[in-house]
Image (cartoon, rainbow, N blue to C red):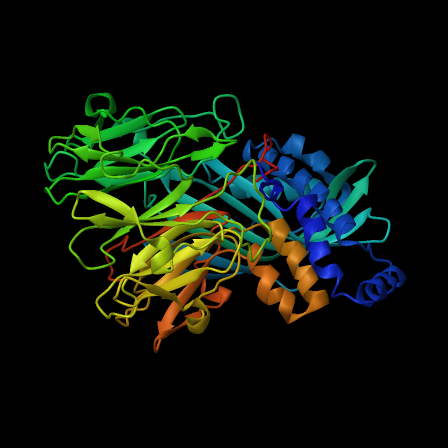
Length: 570
C-alpha cells in the first residue's frame, strides 16, 4: 500500500519538504533562527512528530472516557492540570433546527475559574451522566506549537461525544478548546484544557436507525488490514429492480463473494446471489445496474481489480451480466467486447451521444502496490480511463481517446450531468492526484475540459462528486469529496504561513476536505468553509437528497479510512 495512506505521516512531511526546498531560499533558515531565539521547536518533521505523539495519547484518553473509566483517564492529565467545567460553563443560546433538533451553544463566562484534574473529570462525568450509552468520543488535536526542547506545547483541540440519552434521545456534544501538553518522562500529558465554545445537539429520537440486521442485509467483516480483510478496493452498493416487481433490490460485495438482496416488500431482504448467478464477485471494485440492451430489465455491470504483471493476468476483466427479466443473470462480457482488464474503481452511466443507448465511463486506477504517482497534486502517470460506447446493445467500444476523456490523473470517480442545460450529458471527473476535470460535451461525440475556465479544478485528493441544485436557483451545483486529514492540515497550514498563497492554493487542498461549488452565470464559485457542509473527514461517495422533504437538498457522505491496526492510524 502506498505511503500516502499512512495518513500524512513522515513520508508526507519528507515529500512536502522536498517540494518546497527549491523555492524556500533563505526563509527556512531565517525562520529557524527566529524560532530558536523565541524558544520554539523548529523543523517541520520534529514539530509534527511531537504533535502526533501528543495526539495519540489523547486518542487513548478518548477511549477511556468513552468507557467511562475516569480513574484510568486521570494519568493522562498532569497532577497540576487546569480545565474548564463541562456544566454551568457560561451563557447558553438555544436554537430550534429544521430537523427537529435543539442546539445549545454555551459561551464561557469571562474569567471562568479553571478546575483541578479531579474536579474536571468529575465535571465531565456529570456531563456524560445524561447519556445512557456512549457511541463515540474523540479528543482531537488540530494544531500545536512546542518549546525548543519539545517537552511542552500549546495546542488547539476539539472534543466530540455522540450517544443516546433517556428514551433513546440522540445527543451530540462538541467542544472547541485550547490548552497545553507536557512530556513527563516518555509520555505526553494534557496540562490544560480551556473550552472556547461548547455545543450540544439533542433530538427526541435519531433521524436514522440502523436496521441492517433485522432487514437481513448485515454483513460483518474483519477490519481493514486484519486477517480475512487485507484488500483495499472500492466496493459500494448498487440499487435496481432486478425482477420487475416495483421494489428496489441491492447488490454489494465483500472480498470473497457477492450479495444480491431481493426486496421482499415488508422491510426485509433475502440474499438470492447464488440463485441469481452472481455470488462469484471476488475482486469487484464497483458496480451499477442499467438496462444496456433496452429489453426493460436491469442488467448489472461490474468493475473488477484487473491488470497484467509480466504478461500474467490478475483478477477479472470487466463483467456485464444480462438479466433474464426474472432476476437471473448471465455473463455476456466476451459477447459484447468487454473482455479487458482494468482496475475499475468507479463507473458512471449516461447516454452521452444521445443515440438512445446507455454508455459507460470507467475510472481506471493504477495498481496500488506497484505504481506510485509522479506528482502528489498533478500526476500524469495514471492509467487511461474508458468511455465504453454502447453500440445498439450488441457491443461496447472504447472511444475515450477520440472523445478526449482518457485522462491519466489517477481518476477515482466520475459523475454525468447536463450542467449547462444544452441537452447533452457533461462529465466531472475527480482525480486522486491531480486537478479535477469538467468535460463539456460538444454534442458531436467529443468533449473539452473546461474545469480551469469555470473554476472547478479543485486540486487535491478527489474521491467523488455529486451534482444537484443546492441553492434552488434552477442551476446544477457541484459537491466534491476529497481526502481530509488533521495532520495534513496542520502541516500544510504551516507551509502556507511560510510560503504564502502559492502553497495554499495548491498543496493545501491535499488535506482540506470537501468542496461545494455553486453555479453562478455559467461559472462556479466555491463556498467558504464557514458555510458548512465540508467537514466530512476522509470522505468518499456523497449523495444529495432531501432527507426531511422540506424542498432543500441535504447531504450524506460516506467517510473513514484505517491505514493500520491501530485506531491512531485513521
